Length: 550
Image (cartoon, rainbow, N blue to C red):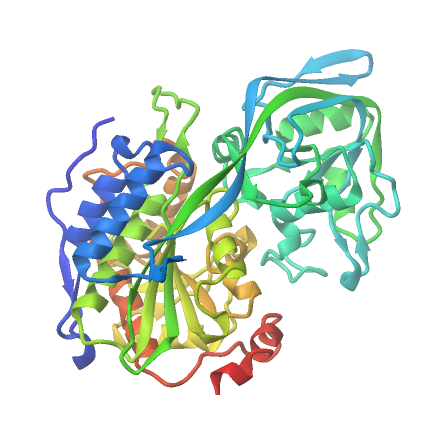
């Protein structure tokens, strides 16, 4: 693959209000950053590789050139440009041997094609599971507040459990889990956490494209690569020996061999009455080695210091990492460039940072946190939220940008999930001033609210939003926007094909950057604090620190 230059990209002048008249967000400059960060030379920007050092150095150079200050770890009385993020890294060594015995027949499951087993993150250097009983565990949910237990007291120790992806409400759109919108119980991360709590040998999530919101290629590429986690005193409390995904057709076949019907069991699993089912005559075996080590990755942190209330901060976030070098695609390409996801988000935030640095000093400080290991489970932002460089109670808001669209300008814009906060209302109002309308998350069932770097801050109570480009394109409308999104998810998301190319229209990214800059300007020069709305599950955490903001 050769990196392609974009012939031209528009510059969008921020002239909608007097406060913004002196600044611009440039699509051409966004494109220059993307071209560098998504080039083969950056090898897919995987953490704890030589590409990390190259990426971090590039980001620091850009922040320096734009005139920002370092705002990372305090070392010898001075701020560094980075925050150290200690991580545990796990990678499968050698082949993965996986077999299933069913009805006297032994079936071999092909790693990456029929099953995608993750490197064990529970600290084991060798995983061996021999003839473990197999259980169908519905959606794998234990939710006492909903009087819901998919395991009904079954002892799962030593068992391998097949679980459905998403929530019990996904297909019907109604029930105890909020209807179509995904709850945290629908996330695969929750299901693996539950496996550890249950003491199971492991959980295998049954892949279906619609409820997962992505195809098997994404599952394969994300899970057969190296795995990262935060450093834990006892990783067995968070991870079972076996975590992975299995193709729907494989699960259907195994259930059939045990005399069970997949579709009938799925319907049953959508009800509180569901009982877990042991697959009689079916056992599971696997064996593989794991290279486990600790590494230190980096968040990059820069600041434009406020001249009135510098201890109050607006935080822009975006993740620099992608999947690195992995399995080849059909064309033999092994570099997962991550051009849209998320070189584009980082590039746009770099331009927003330069706009702040060149403009009038804001009243509040504006910080730019470019985080590591998002693709490994939001680990860079999770680490910052748990170990903040600056008090979270004085963090006004978090504005996250991940994978802005390259399809061109849109009449609308969106956000991941429903933030249920004043911050979202402020975003909507700023969009209206710029002639754009807000569209609620069109796919809340995909669980995007839990999948972006704003979420660790949300859990801590900080009003946060993950911005999304609109789907009503200026050229082609909603039909064109949805077609672009569908094609990207199927053909490029978490695949080597996520590359920078001549078909990119950067006007939309500049437009999105304009809106986020406008919102940041409003927040940085105001005295008010956005709050969670009544009824939000995150309001109590924020309210607990209210005294610090008076």
